[in-house]
Length: 249
Image 1 (cartoon, rainbow, N blue to C red):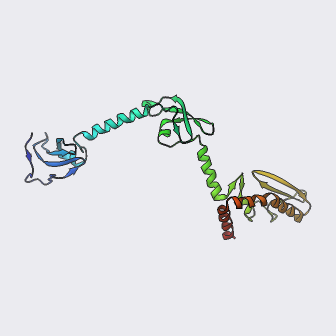
Image 2: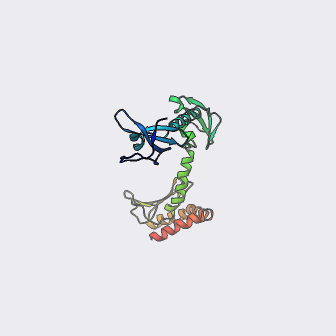
Image 3: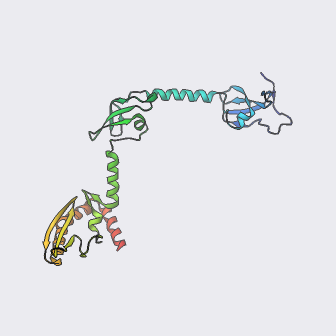
């Protein structure tokens, strides 16, 4: 064993007792590098004693006796084994792995054919499955988006509760009544109403008042029962939308 100078004299940068990663400096080794740089003897947390160049300690190049590197290699080997595992039959969220679709470089980019609970088939990369990035064919994401729309706008059954409760006139409306439009060529008024993703014509009238009455009757027949159902089914959402409308008035 090299002689150790525990308390070196005339040393401007005494590292004795300092810790660098897993290494604790025990003292200066009685040797130097070929370019006359200092070498320090260190004790690793694993018990090994090693001599390390001062610069390697200070810039962080050496942080152990070598055990950190060995552990990293071991973990990499374990990770490689994990990536080579067969995923057939395993469940990831709503997905069930059916078979391997293709083999990627070093097993990291394998793609697997999966069946979603909604019966759709989709090919997904191993990493997407193992890291939990992909949990469905896309239906789960769509459902979450729909739920956000339901919470924000009261969107349900292709009907936007916020819109049908609103008294605000559409920008293209020139008559002052929702769902009532003037045919400039004939001079007659046309009434209509949207509900559950469809547009219903309520007929053509000679006067504005008749068209407006037809529209109001349509609202009472289609929107009225629907809003009552929505209020009973989603009372908190209904109150939130109603409150928002009152605040904007």
